[in-house]
Image 1 (cartoon, rainbow, N blue to C red):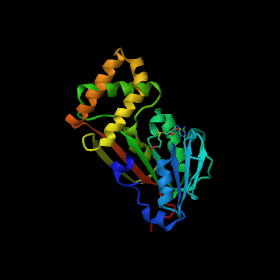
Image 2 (cartoon, helix red, strand yellow):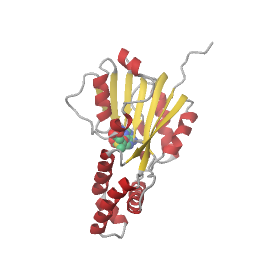
Image 3 (cartoon, rainbow, N blue to C red):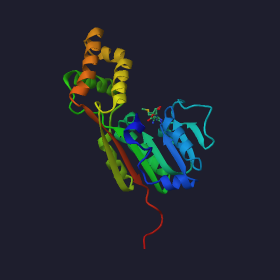
Image 4 (cartoon, helix red, strand yellow):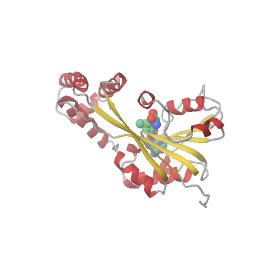
Length: 245
Ligand SMILES: C[S@@+](CC[C@H](N)C(=O)[O-])C[C@H]1O[C@@H](n2cnc3c(N)ncnc32)[C@H](O)[C@@H]1O
């Protein structure tokens, strides 16, 4: 879904260098490693490392220029300072909802980044625009479930974190995604609410049949109301050590 929305793998200005080769790229919270597997395949002359606290990444059929390590970013990622030219972290910051933990994550990312290297963060906003009554109700319950699990959308705090960590050339790109234009977004919505049904029902007084009815009404509403959501890429550069003349 991500590539269909963005039509590119990153926004930082690094494509030429990745093609030239020798770039070190880190994907933090890589999950099942879809992004980094494709990146390693497209840029065979650069080196890629995926890190996650859980081993969801594959163990075989890996491109030669790709490695994985299991680590908790809050304990530090076991690499020397200034090891990476590009660090990518997608859909992970909600797992660090407190200010302190986000600051800890950021200072670790900046420690690992080479001077002149780029950090790119991709996050959903966690809001829907023009939602109908059924989707509004269900989405609100989903966000409550996430919050109770310590997962909070944090998009609004990201620009400040770039600034506090003295990253330069800060930019953001937003994509507003309408369900009526992306069928796969509707499918993800449906799958998420099917998967979360049991948990959401524990938080509400609605009956399972009513939940199913609301869910199918929601899908119709998302199209009818032209409901949308926002996904954002934030990126910035660690200042180079060279003095400007
Ligand atoms: C929503 S998934 C995103 C996975 C992947 N980036 C993607 O976009 O498909 C969030 C990932 O962050 C990882 N994660 C959460 N806390 C972490 C931590 N403290 N250190 C490293 N990874 C962490 C989770 O295990 C999970 O794989």
